[in-house]
Image 1 (cartoon, rainbow, N blue to C red):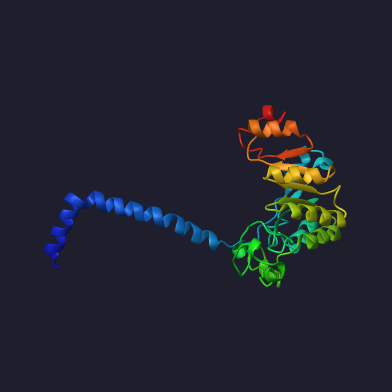
Image 2: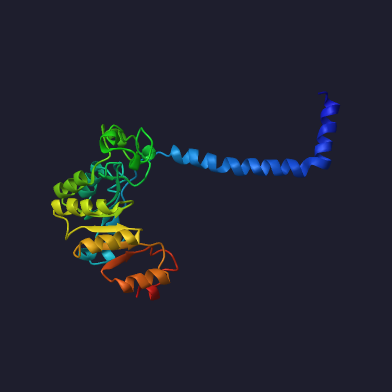
Length: 260
């Protein structure tokens, strides 16, 4: 195409076709955005971060005996999340409690992982619920803070994590991510076996899971996770005061009136 022909074609597009061209570009952008976003998320790598000096911020304003420091997914800014290494780091830095997330494998073994798919934290991919436990431990954890310092890290069972909590004198806060009814029975057996029935807490965004745990055990501490204190949440709190509530205190909707 010579220069004059190119200019003529451009003038035609500009005069008659630009709405079509614009529409095509918008469609391409809309289709591409989630693909690019997912690709970025898939390759997200976690690095170590310096711990926050809590003593200079909060402890001076509050009775230290009333502060319960909880390490989210273990001390995940210093070791890969939800691993025994993260439990040990939490104890080393003086945390009282470690929060961990649990799911069940295809053969009903309780293991510790935040995500349903192992691709974010290991060298393999696929949903935990599709793996047997012995297939799952063929995957190596290759992501997370300082992961290169912990060779051969595997996804741990709940039993292994509770043993690590015992050994390091920290209390577990166990978040149920998914479950079966039979699995809840096993969960309580594992907690009891490790001596944590009266000193751990079980939390979940799934209120039904907590109700079923309460039916099975009247002693264990339970908390419903909610994003906001709306009417339904407040009614549930009043209907069953044996199940506490954990909410985001930074959201304006969760105001002092509702908390009281």
